[in-house]
Image (cartoon, helix red, strand yellow):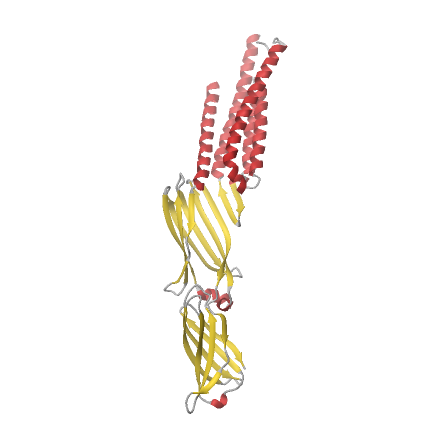
Length: 260
Length: 151
């Protein structure tokens, strides 16, 4: 019996030593893993969706490979409605190697507008839920999750329609000039058209006009829409305007604005 | 030598030796803990209560170890050995929250699944417990053999 007790003692000691050494080496291995989040890029896809791209550089200087690296990003609006959910999976991040992972998230702008058209005109914040999962040394699953807020810049921030000016177009027609202005706070360039329909106070259609808009991100836009009115007698001091905005990313309208 | 026939001086010498051995062992173990605690210091900054958790473990483990050493040569030594193994099992289960550790750090939630490690550690502790039981059986067996030889 003494021999078997001795054998158990030796085996237990060795196994404990192995287990402790393994745990300590894994802990020190994590310390030497570098995660660098590069500058995120925003672009528009062929399907006219917003594409957020986040390159991540991972330098595994530890003693073990990192397996099943999985990065999941969920973009939610203010009402916690999921706008986008995408995952990036890397099967193995080898030790002593630098791995670059490009995590992309596509957001359909129309989905965003379905819940609130406020996103077009007011700067706000979106919720970002990130989960990073990985398996250390093949046996220890680790998961990090965090909630972030993503600032959202409105593409038509401070959209304003100025005072309508009337002038003579030709002998029979009157030209109405409607000034429009806004600031593009969105992370993309805005290209499209603005169409305005004018109605008088009796709901009689006076005419419509269209202009193309081109507002790079972060710029202010000022222009006017010219509308040719057939019958000058139908013009009234007050009435309403119907604004239609058509861009490659979204279509919006009619937005009804009273004048006068 | 028969326990009853040994003199007071011999008993005192034996107890002193046992206490000395226990003290040296405890000092060595504490030394190891002291060195390891320096490496574990960064973890204490991240995990609240980690230092206290390790200190409690070391204190109880040292206490059981000292008792085991002092009672060496008796069956109680093995009882304390078994108690030590059981304490390690229970301590690991409770302190590691069943193997799934969740930490909150600067707004992020970190979850580490060490159930596999916990399972291996529990199995090793059970092996230690089994060893103590075997040692106790062996001790009693030898004692019974010695007594039967006297008759």
